[in-house]
Image (cartoon, rainbow, N blue to C red; front, side, top):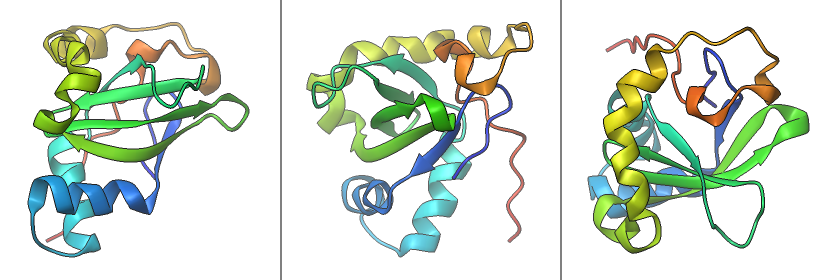
Length: 134
């Protein structure tokens, strides 16, 4: 789980890391995948998405690809179900890639304090400063 500075927490189903290992890293174990994913992708840009016909679905574009899942608003959690590398996700989520160009701007905007479940999706995915022990 990744706690977020402004928005809902992000919960990563094990399948996300399995796909990250298979589609992007090509080697390693779960601990290695978690470390690499969060080092490279802790900042994400979330956008509403057409994923599994779920009206609460979101996709997060990040440096290495896309993670997709849905917002569980009552729990203030984005439940992420799978990972697509940039090539595999291009057909399905490619239009979201351009949002990464706005990430620095969106993440620098100061928003009025709101409950995590009511924070606009452009504020999600900021995380906190990341420090991973060696």
